[in-house]
Length: 169
Image (cartoon, rainbow, N blue to C red):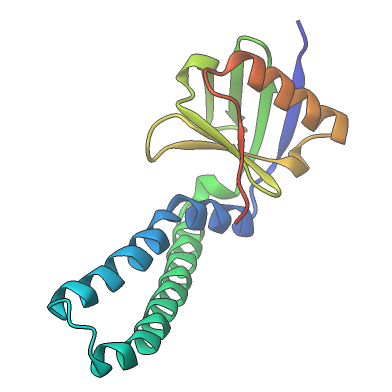
């Protein structure tokens, strides 16, 4: 049985990246429902006023998305700063049976691969969702080498119900 070890301290940037990723659907919803709202409230008239309104609507959507991302990042930074557990060292032991997360001096939790509902690979981070709002974060920097990262992906993809999806944010 292959055993991998990963350890380190979660950075504020990684925590913020997870929160932005977590709320990624908001931008999609805004870009669909704002134009739909303007279309419905305009009574389907494609007159000159409606046509002139289109560029302003796109600017409004863009500003709304930018402001929401800034708000999400600010909220995540405040949450990270107020959580003393977020700044403690974590050690992960990864095997074919599951993942053990140990927060040094605080907790020790064993997760089976079947506990993971969905999983994603971001640029510098693996996100394994245990529930809709709870996730294991394993930054790639926690691994000792690129071979360990590849071995983790291999073990995870063999044991998870759904393969790790690559996401770009």
